[in-house]
Image 1: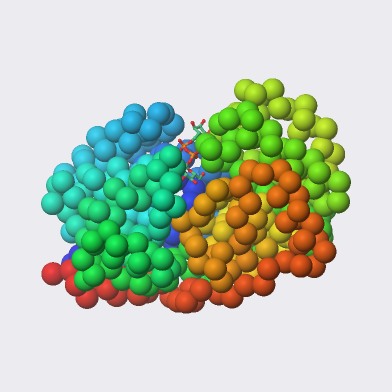
Image 2: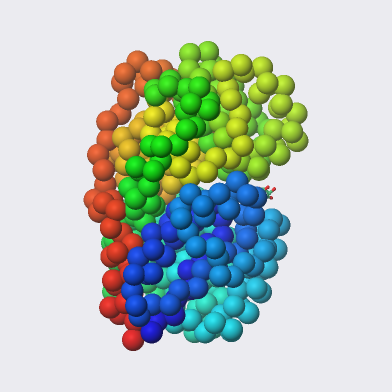
Length: 365
Ligand code: UD1
């Protein structure tokens, strides 16, 4: 029997662990323990996803909540150490690049427990991004590195990670997208919002580099106020960005945009339905760059770089930064039917979790 702890902490982790947990449950020789650190704790940032993704309730909830980076990371480490002591797992699986990812891998490896990092090798080469630090730390101490795209293989090789640890398996987030595509079609969100396919732009925005400074946040809102003259904007807003709008006194600017609809954060299925039918996405998220590439929906990424270059090289993604004029220009192009056409990257076929679990079972003594 192999005992495996699967870790989730924040919203972008849930759709990545769900397929791994599902595949593991079909193996008689695997016992899983699902640990939720509680980095995200709002119902709409967490619980809703467990329901939508048909995930079992976490076996262990660490309840760490929000705090500074040091404090949040430290709280996860203190609590997760107790979990490892008690559960004595053979392996810990972490996904993505959030603080919980780095914290749990650090604890596990120091207690002599093997770590598998799913979504390894991605690099933005921008160390001002907290996620870049989490990615570097996690990759250097992991025993299994599961990679989603060619750039991940190249980066890990350049960093000297031994080739036998690295496995190109595709993307578990795309497994979820494929698995739940039919269910997402039945979401009633478009009727609720009274929108039609291709009738709107879908926006997500929460990176500290965009929303934690008044100037950058204002530049983006300026772009939205131009865009909303021609295209409805649907904007499910992250709690961090909501807080900053209030803090910077930007509420009036937002209220003046009659064609911009601010919503609470949405569940997985509703968001998938809206994304699939959008004219375009405007986002600073990591995962959405990939989901739009898979779906063939145009995506403008409001960042200076991406750690997921395959979405630009062969997908539908265009990097636009926070440059008001460039954003407006690229949106016009899409409205005029000149959107970039993309292809689906290699191995994004819905079977990544199967490959990962087969490798783990085949190599764990
Ligand atoms: C985290 C991840 C980021 C990911 C994002 C997805 C890190 C370093 N960052 O950023 O990579 O893209 O999640 O959402 O791990 N808050 C709530 N309720 C919640 C969670 C957060 O109100 O359930 C508010 C709190 O005020 C908190 C702020 O959002 O201070 C930021 O939360 P935090 O988990 O620190 O980082 P995110 O910005 O969500």
